[in-house]
Length: 312
Image 1 (cartoon, one colour):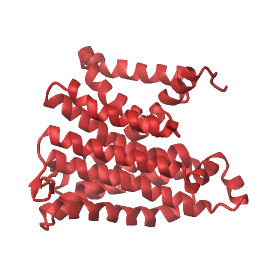
Image 2 (cartoon, one colour):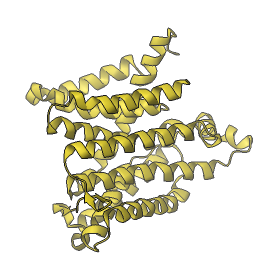
Image 3 (cartoon, helix red, strand yellow):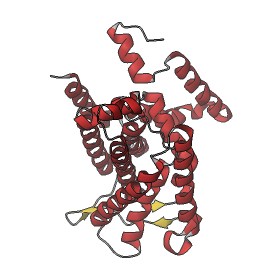
Image 4 (cartoon, helix red, strand yellow):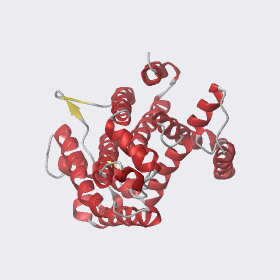
């Protein structure tokens, strides 16, 4: 069994066995939120970790997926599954149209462009009251499959868990494909990659669209699970949270993205015992992790367990 297969089997085992430790609906709710954040982070890690392209506006794609499903089902009476698929496809088209011009930029110019994109999406969602409900948000009908509505934390746990496993499996296959090797070459040196015949523009746009699809899918699932959607998840701060999860877990590590999402989703819940010092402790934990584990949590632990030293 390859290392990739073993890691995927381990993740599947965790998803299957975790309900044994979940005592009530609150724990299921946290686990579902971990899964939804992890789906976004797995896609974002393909863009940031493997391709080396920064995005500070991915919460915009998350919000478009959520509001796309909400509007199509609540305003126009679409079946939820059709709305979810259409919203995700629409975000993919939009990401392609946006990605072609802005991915010509590099470094902080690219960061600023994606930041502007996210802010524009956030403003549009918050101000289009008639369509989106504005700052107050809007209700979202329950997700239905085969004539039955999906309800309850336990049912949604399995839906999100299965989606996460599929997302990780697809990401691992992409990373091991020729496209994945091209992305790693771009990350190392874009000029060098182009000299060897790699079409950098095409590969960057492709991975940008894939990462946007991951975010939109998670957004649509979040909207149907919560039954209500607001602009709070479309803000710049949510984009920063997603990037932080990827960096914390370990860039260029698919399972690092999952672990980063899990730790930074659960940690604030665990730190509530510190009351007004909660954010101070949270910040200290992140600082110490980055100081002593500069490559991120999972890559550093993997190197430590293998007995190798971290490169300086």
